Image 1 (cartoon, one colour):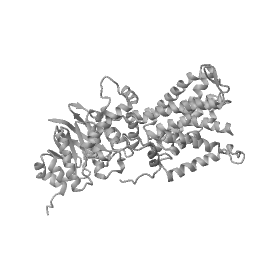
Image 2 (image 1 turned 30 degrees about the vertical axis):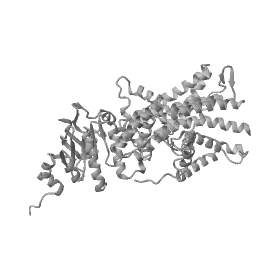
Image 3 (image 1 turned 180 degrees about the vertical axis):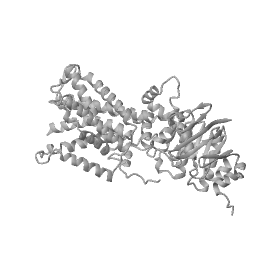
Image 4 (image 1 turned 90 degrees about the vertical axis):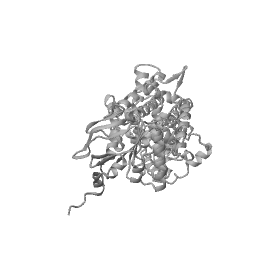
Length: 260
Length: 310
């Protein structure tokens, strides 16, 4: 079952077409890979889906709803969480506070109150609310084995832990889909193996994962289906085995064999 | 001499209110705004008009002054807060000057002989400074606790998130524009309250006293005390006010021109940026379940920031 699909999404920056009529399908409950050489438009596509950028044309459907052009914060509240290629943590907040920020939109999901009334309520009940959020945030830190670092500033964390914290923050919002933009970039093999375990645990929680990654070992091992982009266009889609033997994909990564 | 110290304490209180507002805008949400003098001006005029022209009570003018500047802050905020960094700074600078120029052009003399504030028949006059100190500092305390509550609530954390990383904040479901406008409006409101007290103390409103330098001074207090740290900001207000009145205090006002203090602000800003960019007290480290005692917190806040890792 498709939880999210893009229909003919195009994004042009002046004359450069970064994403060209891409139909990207995300299957529910699976780990979906999005791969392609550098500059293929993977992150641009992520940005369109998560509302950080608006497509030039095309439609994005999530759970049967058209979310094209919605602002990022609304899309996030619909249940789409993401991490960033270059880690974006709140450096001057502590680790636990970062995860509490992930829980931000979970407070005030009460349909009988407007968000403004909820904000006023949050102001007067700050102590009680903080304690609740704190406990919930700690549960997520336990999930990632980061509890011992909870009072550390986010900027002081080692690189691998920063990646994990960013994923924890995204997961705290209880999303339906989690978009991971190159989570293994800059990680050593041990950290990558740990990351793989984490992604499997996330999938087992029933959260759909979409993964941009250059580490082919990780992608081939963990993804249930893979979409390949090259120069803004979708060139292949299928299981890891199909992708591995697809001549178009091999060409995109390694170049064409010389005829001579 | 004692009289003079009391004057400094009163002005420090009025400016502490302004600095608390500036701190909400610059310290918490991270917007570099330079139009607090404008809000100060609006609050002063609102009080002047209500107390003198309409003949109503000072206590009525207090919320109205706050509401007026909040309204102006909101109206200014909606178009300008799309801008970032230096651009926002320039835009707000211009707006602050516009407010002052409008005031100057409407009536260059300003208002005189505004009736005194009264409470249960007691008149707050500038002769009896002690009562005025109590009045102003009561409101500084109230503002302190209100804004501390804000900073430690979910809403305040969201403001800090906007300061730290707007893109990440959006991805966490935070409506960045609303938070920016909200914090700007709150900061403006408290700036208006400060203007209200200034009028109640001097009993005059002069458009010439809401210059750009006032905005810079308030920003200086926030930077000096520590951005985002309310205690630090109040301390900053004290220090800057002390610097401003120092020549008169030591009886050298004939030797040291009044403008000398502006040089000192500049120096203070440069020295602080080089030696201690996080301000005297540093950021407000509100930690959940923090095991450290108050003393340890103060000691830790004076330590150099721990090594930064990329």
